[in-house]
Image (cartoon, protein in one colour):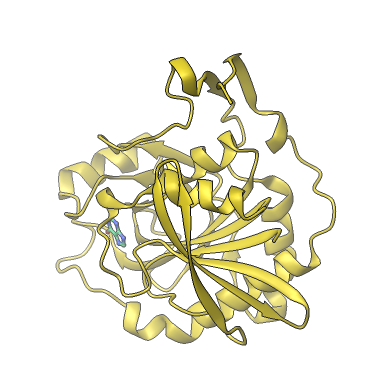
Length: 258
Ligand code: HPA
């Protein structure tokens, strides 16, 4: 099982696929995944918040989720992130490929390499999101009548509360384009396991303080989200060998004990 999609708020199914639920046991706890097949193509589908949306961002077991994908043999993951817009060029309903991030989360388990028996690695984050998979997403987007901005800096906050206007002004000055609660440490953990990972953000609101009232357009986006999910499936189906350095990112100082 080579390919997976991790979906955020609002995407709870993939058009054309029927899934079977499976609980995968990992050293970090169980992970609930969905396994499906369409036209001979196998796909693992994982809803970050659980498919009934009951897990808050700060309680997501990111390590169990990513480890479960590795146990199932997944090498390529495409994800979606619901976000708020900081940059005026990415308005609500807009889509953007993530190319970098700023991490403001705290208290999360952000590494598989936790010292001693679990080893120690410094992970290169020069290019955090797989550029080869990202290019393919952009190439295929017009086929699904989707416009996707080619680059965006994702600000990861801890949630579950939204930000204050002052925080958003700070993130803006630091170069953040969109803000969400779940993109980190997921992207880092995938890199630690040599799993290629690319992400498309879809904006459901202006971030705090940008408009008088925070309004959410999620309800109006279901058709776009469906096309986005179909685009990600097609991307995974059409990808061949990947021209990138994702699997050369680990500087292992001390390997984990088996
Ligand atoms: N802030 C943080 N996370 C979010 C937002 C936001 O405005 N919108 C969707 N996810």
